[in-house]
Length: 289
Image (tube, rainbow, N blue to C red; front, side, top):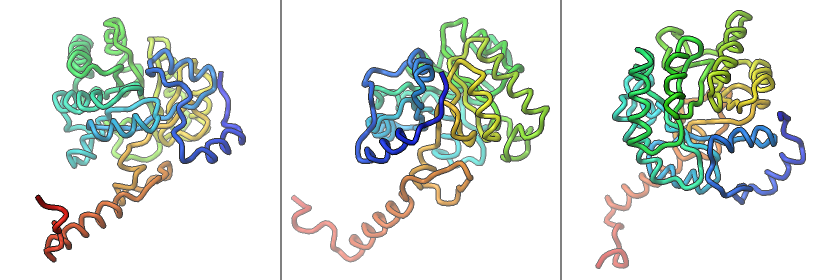
């Protein structure tokens, strides 16, 4: 079942801004993801890469946490997602899983771990699942990676697909601009989405595509479609936590809404600390033994 958010739901959410909206406290599973789509319940997803952040995000009521290869940018300062390794992704995933009680934890398979061949892909997928204890994996691409998708699914590992702007292919695209604006690319995306569903993927991320195309794919598929820059009529949304919390002041894509200004909060706090230390005001008599 698919539906838009009603005005009543939007108002209820505004009225409950100070509360964490978790109607069902059960652990979120891939089965519940599909159940949420059938009920018309929107899915809220954020990234996390460490224990403390994952614990806070989970307590706040997100349905899913993505241990994204965006850790390459956010945690390591790389320009692209390509440099992050399998070992690094497993480290971040293990840290996140320890902090989570309710949310579904999905881990990105990093660049080069599933594109070579299906046997290598399933070997790497099994390693991530065994060492991190995560719930599912996410892979970028459509028809071209189907052999790897099928082999990983045959091993009993749930997969979330990812189409549209696929950052691991940035050197192929050469730009982070909106994808699938022309008819041919849009048709391929819709075809790839159906192929991923038919293969057995439990959900799909659509990144930076026209809103009308996002709506069409969400209506066509039985599995949930999670958008990041794919419009409001998909089944859920995902953002990078550092972006939506305003930690990355210089990143301002149209799809991003900032829910805090932690860049200012943190720099002001650190600046005040530095000032207090320099002025011999910290620690005071009550702050020592």
